[in-house]
Structure formats: C-alpha cells, structure tokens
Image 1: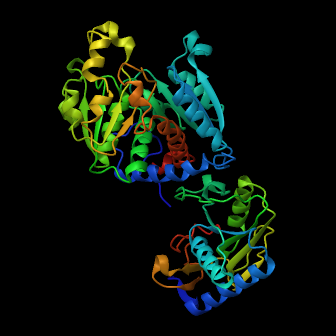
Image 2 (image 1 turned 60 degrees about the horizontal axis):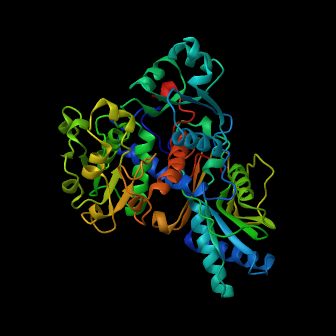
Image 3 (image 1 turned 90 degrees about the vertical axis):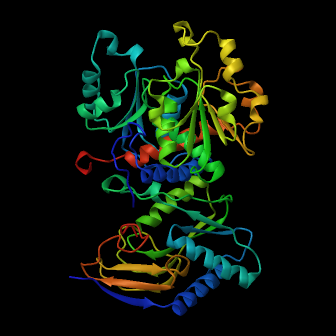
Length: 311
Length: 195
C-alpha cells in the first residue's frame, strides 16, 4: 500500500521523489494494460471525471479521455466554445455547478497559471492539471520522464537538454522540477530573448549555443517553437531559429552514444527539428504519446477516491 | 493484546503439498499443449513458478507461467485509504482455449479469485479455469471453490494467515496470527484481507 502526498496533481514543483517514483512504477504496470486486446480495466467504475478544457488541445485531451475510458470511469467533456462561459459565467460558478452534478475528478487546462490550484479551493473533487498558462504541465513531464526511465532504467546521472522557449514553456518548467528531483542533470537552451529573468534560479546549466548544450548529453527534448509568438519579435525569423537552434543530423554527433530524441508535439517539421531526426531510430516521439496514456491512467488511479480529510 | 503467532506449515510440508498439487494438475490436464499456470501477485506468483518447476521436472515439458496483479479488478478500490501498488501483469501467451490453472497462496473470502476470474476473461476465453491454492482457510463470501488444495486450515475470521517464501522472506513457512490483535494487512505483501 502506498499513496501520494497530495490528493491533487497541480505541478511537479515540490512533489517528493517517492511520489514521482510511485507514479512511474504504476505507469509501468498500466503500460501493459494498453497493449492488451481488451484495453480496459474496471478500476474506476462509478467515478465521474470532468475534462475541463479552457484552451485548445488534441493530444492531451484525447489522451486523458482514453485513459479515463480504459479505467472504466464516466467522462464528461467541457469545451468553452459550446458552454455558458460564452454567456459570461465565471470559472468558479461553472465548476461549482458542474460539481453539484456529482463529479469526482477534474482534469483542467486553462490559460491562467494557478487555475487548477484555484479550483482546489472551490470544489471537493481531485484536480489534475493538464496545463495552466506558462506554469506547469505535470503529466507531460511525467510521461517524458517515464519514457526516459523505460529506456535507460534510471533518471539519475543522465544529462538531459531541454531546447526551446524556456520562458513560456510549461512543459520545460514541469520537466525541470521533476528531472531535478529524480537526480538528472538538466540543461536549458534557447535564444536569450526566450529565457526568463533569473533563469539561473532553476539551478540548471543554461546555454544560448545549442552545440555547447548538446555536447555530451544523453537526451534532447525539443520543444515546439510557438510560431504564433513570432509576431511579438522575440526572435527575428523562423529561419534564423532553425539555423541556430534547430536539431538536425549534423548536431546529433555531439550527443552521447545511445542518445534519445524527444518532442512533446505538435512538431513543426523543418523548424525546431528536421524530419530526418524526428523519424530516426533514436526518436521516441510516438512512444511518448503511447506512454502518455499510461501515465494519465496511473495518475487518475492514484488520486481517485482520495478525500479531503486525508490531506 | 498482542497477536499470538504460530507456525502452521514448515518448508517440508509446503513442498509436499505443492508436489501433490502438481501431480493432481497433471492428472486432470494430460494435454501438455493446452495447460498454463497464472500466479496471483504477490505470493501466488512464487507458488506458480514453483509448481511449474515441479511439473517440468515430472514431465520434461515446459509450462507457460503468467503473473497477474488483480489490483485493478478489486471491488474495494475506493473504500480504502491507500491504493494498493499495482504490479505489472505479465501474461505473454494466449489464454484462448487453454486450460488455465490459477494459483494463489491463501483462499479466504474468494474476492481475490473473483477479481482474477474477471481479469482472465478480459484476456480471452479459456477452455477451463481451475483454481489451486496452498491453503484454504474457509470464510468464503462468494461462491468460489478450489480445485486443488494444499492444506485445509480451520481459522477464525479475524485470524491472519501469512505465507513466507524464501525468495522474499528468507524462509518457507506459513504463519497464523490468532485473534483480534491480528491487523488485516499485517502480513507483508498480503493485501488487506481481500483473500
């Protein structure tokens, strides 16, 4: 018997090593379930999960929904475009009304950092953060960590480079907290305009030269470059970014043997990563997607039924 | 009141019982191609490996061994404070049209076996499912009966029956903890009296 220290998953900052280890171990068990002919277990029968997506998402939402269905939970999907949010209803009123219909768990994506935390204060359900602004995206980082752990059998001592928009990426943020807790050595790399103020406080090695960052690394996790941010002038041109930070075959030579290429998707092929690299034998990009389901099943399972009084 | 603990089966008796179960399984399932064993994690898994080893020694043919964690099929998942740690189920063979011999250490309420039956059916439709247990301690809460029993041990409902195996506990023995002081789940690895 074992349990997580919290009844919500809001982020990986301050989540102890024991909890992350338990999630990874449980994920490994659920990974087997999704390879079965009948990919369904009755574990969460009677539990109702609300997928509350205030921001667009394909991968994460489908992944959560499949995870819920494979655990036999009942699911309700909420998207802002077809809801009373259009009529001006507040987040608090929306969730309290939905909770009055007896919801047990909420998976939330919101553009405001801290929205999941806010929900823990106005409802009793278990809250899982599926991405809140530029803050955290814990299940994405957990699936990245599981994918690495599955390949190398460990996380500690590995050199992992996170490349991209360090300033705005919630995936990078969650990866930093989780990987550091598990003893990995984390390097950050991106254009200086996309590094946050006081980036050194993360306690990672920070690079603005990709070749220096890749030297001797085991894993490169390439973030999507958010083309929609190009207008704001944070980097001069897509082509310049590709030249300076794009991961191509040439640059792979700097990495350690048995290296791994990751990308949380959706990919801009030919921008932050070349097709050649993305489709190579060292790429685990699709494995990440499959593992994502198992991670979400593990998190749903470990948090389900956890009530307030237990902390 | 501290619980009274007593050894009820020693290594020798355990081995004898397992050997007899292996013989009975062979007698009932002469077709080597169709028989497979599945052990229920944790302790049943060790017994499944041992019974498989005895069968291989007796017949000279391998018998596929699967391991099954029934945690996801329990009927009390949400009534407990802590979730049981889910171990990896590993059934690397097809169960369709096989004679599946399910193996567990202690048969008690029958709820573990109920969960295991549900899970096996999700893997396919075996020709038969048979149940082998080292100890039948009574107190069934479901209509479940073992096909092969090592030892019948009369117990009180609040007693705890605990199997220790050398692979995990450095000794082969079965203990009984008598009386109310015996906390459910006190046996290492035994999941809260689901039995």
